[in-house]
Image 1 (tube, rainbow, N blue to C red):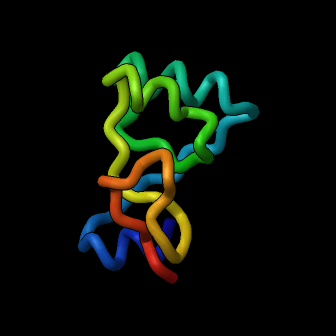
Image 2: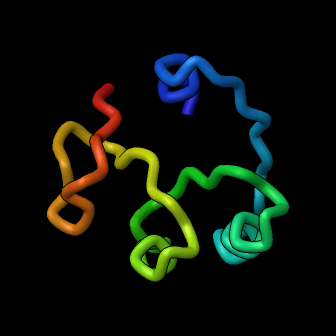
Image 3: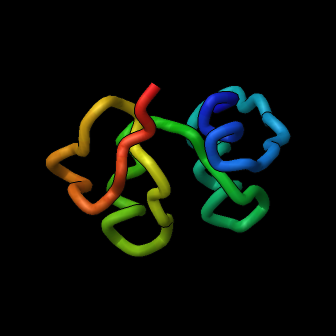
Length: 72
C-alpha cells in the first residue's frame, strides 16, 4: 500500500481489521473509502458496489482486463 500511495500521490490511514468480513462491511457501508484486498471482493466489483482501482501484480488480470496493474 505504501508504494501505491506514493505513486498515486495520496496518504492513507491504515485500519487493522480482525477479518475480511468486517473490512468489507465497512467499505460497502461507506465507513471507509478504500479496501486493499484480494479478488475475494470480485463479486462486489462485478455487481457495481465497489470500484476496482488497481490490481496487485505485474500484468492485467483476465477477470479485470480494464483495470491496470500496480507494478512494483
